[in-house]
Length: 363
Image 1 (cartoon, helix red, strand yellow):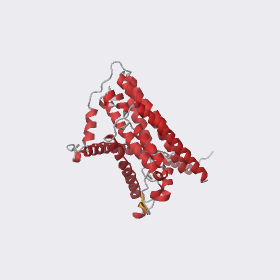
Image 2 (image 1 turned 90 degrees about the vertical axis):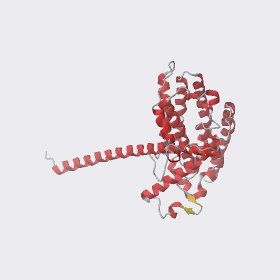
Image 3 (image 1 turned 120 degrees about the vertical axis):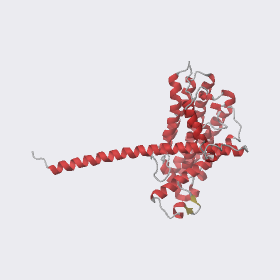
Image 4 (image 1 turned 120 degrees about the horizontal axis):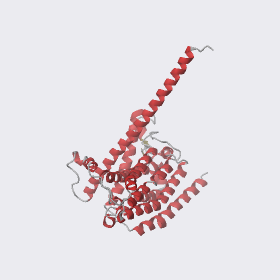
């Protein structure tokens, strides 16, 4: 049997090109992931600085000013200090649960960033179940908090973990019903499709105007999921010392600190995607791409504008949870559960039924 050398060379060149494509694909995937993680870390540092500056303005004091220009490096200095703190372990606690708990809380929140579109098709995972993947993954975080509270062998920590689990279960159901209403309006559960469905009518096409009741319920539920005042019962200082964080120090305490701000940024980004039009910012009758003379496929400039608009909306929305922290008093645990089960759940269910009825009538 005679083998043609040209065929062998063609096969070898084809296999070589395929392997090079696979290598480039892997490199591009890791570059995208690390770029996203780096951007998230920078975003968290900006949130911490913003919260301190806004809090200082509300309370009429100076705020951070020495670490870097305008005190912008203060959060970085605090994080560096936590890295070098001694990592203490409870002598009679469950060390495995105690050590794994903070990691579960952070990883579950980080994975939720995979489905957030920062620009036109600029998303790591454009999945058909994007928003529900976020809800599924984020429900794992309270398990980490409960593990941390139980593994600490401390009554305050265990009470904080139980409160975190109860609070998450109570407010995830109204949150899910609001997201389901948005999916019905957009005929898709993909985050990219939801943003593009809002772009058809410009500024007035935002789901904020089509789902005002759902927006309010989503806002309250996201505050409770982030454990921000007035819903910070799992770590109430006056009652539980620091809740599930009581026995933690060093890098593990820093992970909880990062997780809380990661969750806050995540909630703001999902509010932007679900209700505020995502990367599309259209002044009534004037579209931003038309204003700059670009279209959706305008390369780097268009992507940059999309990322800037998404982050601008998210950080503007962050003023709400930051100001409520210094405005509203902490509610009791029974009031928190009553608000979730007896008030928000019926309203979100009624909103879903109303949305379903309107969609059926419009068919």
